[in-house]
Length: 228
Image (cartoon, rainbow, N blue to C red; front, side, top):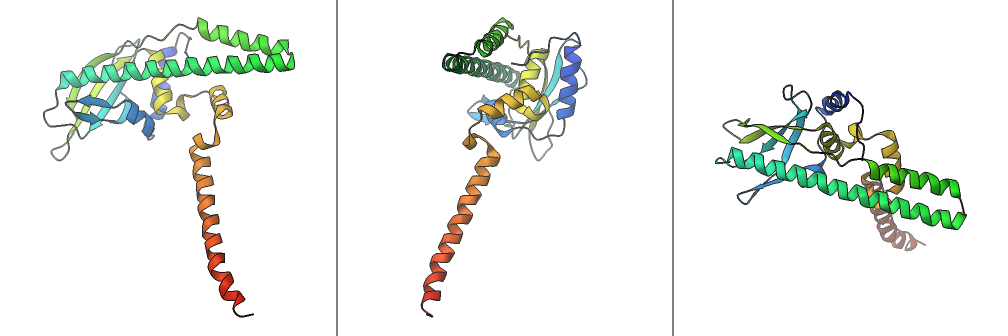
């Protein structure tokens, strides 16, 4: 996980959240951060930074569209806190499994190639990962309010998080803004073609086009041969 260790870590993460303003939120993040309240599932329509909040934290505002008219503000805030904490914990577990898998693959390559340097680098990276402290979420709900209109109920929830947690949440919601070049390169190297939305769409469309051409030829060729 990408922990920001510099003194100005809060400012760095806040700047990234400001850059993310206006970008569409990842659909998978919406689903994973959904709040369940009284049998209803509320997905955040947007998450953005707001101007106030404590100086040592990152203030974020969640917007939930389609909230029930009798939505309990206190329960919504508590449910949001639980959803964010569980999502960040799931991300930490996934990152641990990913790091462990990379270490095992590196160990296997080292045994096959007898390369001590590659093994030392992999072990050093693994130890560095294990030495990083787990991020403290420190999520505090500051305000839950009605941000909608007469036509549509929209609930806003303003919270603050630790810079480490806000950084991880940013990578979940706006990966292209928060992910470093090294993280992107490693992720793309591990990505299977069917996990890449672009390649999935490309190969899917190609198969459809090939099928259409084959069907067209199947209908055209018999008509052509009848004239000979």
